[in-house]
Image 1 (cartoon, one colour):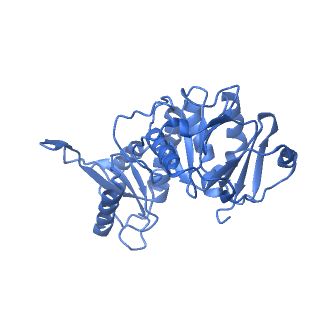
Image 2 (cartoon, helix red, strand yellow; image 1 turned 180 degrees about the vertical axis):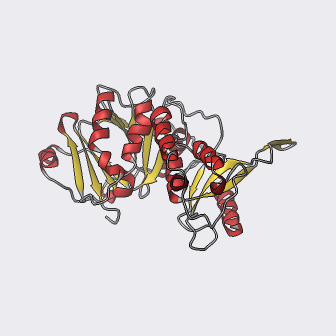
Image 3 (tube, helix red, strand yellow; image 1 turned 45 degrees about the vertical axis):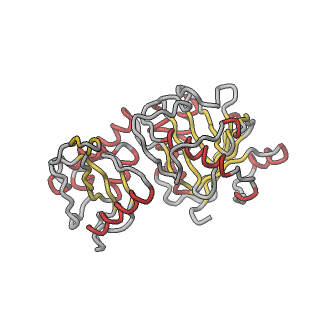
Length: 334
């Protein structure tokens, strides 16, 4: 466990990311190097050490809490503080002091099956705090010759992302900084308003700020859009719709392979470059897709199977011709 703490410290120092109570850290490996199910971390306010004020500023103590994959997923789909409180309520899962027992063999939801209902209810009533992920995704505007095929064929060959031109270094840093400032807001504030209550370098390997003028990125509207996700990213689409857009928020998929990004926007989000008349708009390689309320409900139904993809035959394309949108799901290894 000490090795994990030292590695976390190194990551914080190298990336200048700050760790806050409520954050989650996917680790995908037993924290003590054993065969334990405790393979991820949630961050919580230390139950014993209160914040202090020093001559250098205030200091808040954050406790690392080891969790199972199911508990990490609940924190991602709902929110970290909510799951922390559930862990406090079960003594063998942490109890009031949030003590991590690496020998714990059951998840929170196996110990208390009714707790899953609390998570599901929380997602429905409060939505999700997860506002963006680093993923394998891409987007394109099909040409006129491709549109008929787009809505007739059952699948697509994955396009080479390198065929699209890359923006300049300055433009790249600007869009990354913009995403960094905008993705961590949990309230339905305007996309264009990137002021945030706390300074923080985001995920997505981005810089905190950029002096590049916004005019460097050309904004344009699109008639048709084809979105592509690998299965891992696609499994979060129901969450994005149900836990974010239904609650008047936005959700962003940031490409792990290039500088492109896809932001799904609900009509109540202010400041989007997309609107009801032009639901597809791009700013450089950043695409915004505005989904009408009735379309959100339609997509929730159509994409529900992605929550538990199981035996889903890939690639698979979901088409909404009247909306001029289609989404292709590709295997993770594609």
